[in-house]
Length: 247
Image (cartoon, rainbow, N blue to C red):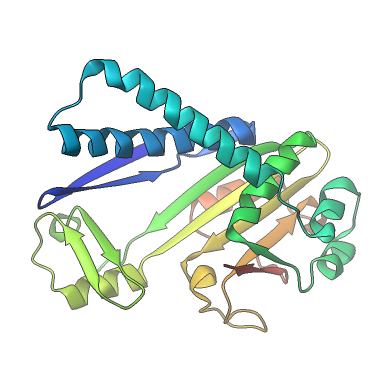
């Protein structure tokens, strides 16, 4: 897992990004990710309040981060999933059946975590791969440490740069990424993936104008190894299945 900390005036912005993982326990991966996300933020909070961090506080911070994460994962794990998703995980279905089953299905952001956790309880291993592509017209040396584009279009950034806010906004909007999560029980695998356009609802097709996940599985006639190789290069096969994302 990569942690990022950026100074902005008297404030510190703490960010994180999950590393690629392969055939792991989803609960272990998510717990480690959240603990390592919460801990730096708590450390910076106490440093800001006290001016420094007494060494004897760190064990308590780590313990609290673990307790908070465990409570969060337990809550998410026990949320209900659409019955179609449960059926997808538990039954042997052909491509046509999967496409029909998932038509019109939606998940909220927390239920994505629920899906991974409940799949783990059903014997599925969890893999996650990420690809990032930046527009070639921007020189890496010109980029600031970070850029954050708010929903209202305002741009925040940290570090030195010669780019205008308009150029930074264009960079964010034109950059692409591909995140692919695969659940594999040894007999069947299911892949849920998303890119910048699918999250922003900027794709074509019936559901392309709404934020969504793409879905593909072993029943689509593609080898898992070929799929992984493809997503690592930033491309993905066509799939007619769009799982809508809600708040």
